[in-house]
Image (cartoon, rainbow over all chains, first blue to last red):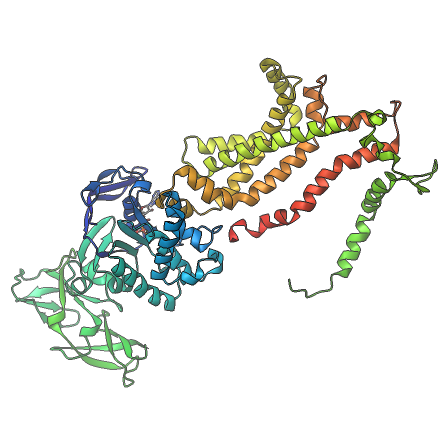
Length: 351
Length: 274
Ligand SMILES: Nc1ncnc2c1ncn2[C@@H]1O[C@H](COP(=O)(O)OP(=O)(O)OP(=O)(O)O)[C@@H](O)[C@H]1O
Ligand SMILES: [Mg+2]
């Protein structure tokens, strides 16, 4: 089911947290709401499921306006960050609760619970209490409970935040598998870009209650619309150099780095610009040599990360296949791939 | 539990300190089934005659009517206190009602007033509504006096139940009432148990209120009954008989403790651990 937020506004005690947000989630898609802490991700999610009342605008599920509908009638499945399982009930009863509330017959309940338990791989845990489950298993139970009555929408609020690194990896693909198998429209709130990029069809990057850009992970990464988006996606993060235009080229006076501007762009001489260089575009094949001193090196097994300080103190990051000929303190001259450089105006918009 | 020190010295010390109390309790029990020569504390014969009050109304007057009255008295108070505390505590803990803070403060302050400072006001109110000298009146007053404590205890227990559980229930399609009944209430059960126990013990031992607010009523609770029995000027006065009635009066409380000891211990172990 398609979800549309139209001019959605949310105010807490006279303090506007979200001002006229517009968002469309396509039918069957998994969308990530990604942004720094406090930007209004959870607020948006809770408005969609009805925990928060909207102060302005509309929320549409398909053609249906649910803005003023109580949670119980919205048919939304929610997975909370701490799972919110009912501790006094068995796993079976937890999953069956939404069906019992609906007064389904015993046979139907047993069948539906079993089906969903098999989908989420917890069929052998049905007799246990939540307290007797591991974090990953609790997560599966929470998913099963959210999905058992076939909701129109599945909302996940930082579902992986409480898991350790290995489980997180496993549950990432599990949640995605379950979402694809059920074909449900899902919204995932996270502040982990890797999660957002690996699990979702599209990412909406939020900041200060606004959606800055909404795109497929790959497009978002290669084509950020602002320097904030460019800085938010990518690990290790992109590095920025400040400079100005000079005769149709970008010049960083402090370091002497000159780069050609992207084709078809004309900017007045002397305009201040910021250029963003992703670490994979520095230190490999390229067309612009940049001299600097390695100030930090870190090996991650397959790859090494380097921070290179340019003469004026600016930092460029580089990620390269593992090598041990470069140490902190070494002077290097590495190639920068100017074709992949991203140019931004001083107020952060992409050229 | 792992033990990294011997605990017999502690047990011994505790035992020595409590010796007077233990002896006192022992004699309370022993004296009810023995006879002893005048002027001596050492029993010299076994008898059940001190317990004859259970079947023989001429010994001290009928004991069963006050017992039933006390049970009714206690049960009504427990029901009222539990009913109101469990709902009011929830409201104070969760609902965003106006004057919530103010109300909480008032509840706390009310708890601080000793009974005697309120008794004249209570007396006037009862007189006015026509409940003076009635069991209902005493029950209402006693329950009312316990409520601030009960509401606070229950609010504290509700505060520990995560907010998300409630929201999850609402998302699952349950009404607010079902959520409270099926999801929240089971998690504050230890609190309800403790409160019920405290209220029961408190009500069972109540003496002042029936005495003051229903002095000439036709009902009698056990505490009042015991007081009559202990009157040394009465013709039926017998110290061992008095002790037997006292023990009879205490037994239900001891039984409650014995039965619910595990539940009480559970309170601080975290009731939500499943
Ligand atoms: N119930 C509330 N009352 C008042 N302000 C609130 C309330 N809930 C959220 N806010 C405010 O709204 C803003 C957005 O909060 P929200 O919880 O949506 O952030 P978030 O993006 O989910 O952050 P995080 O990643 O830390 O969870 C914050 O500034 C927060 O202080
Ligand atoms: Mg949040």
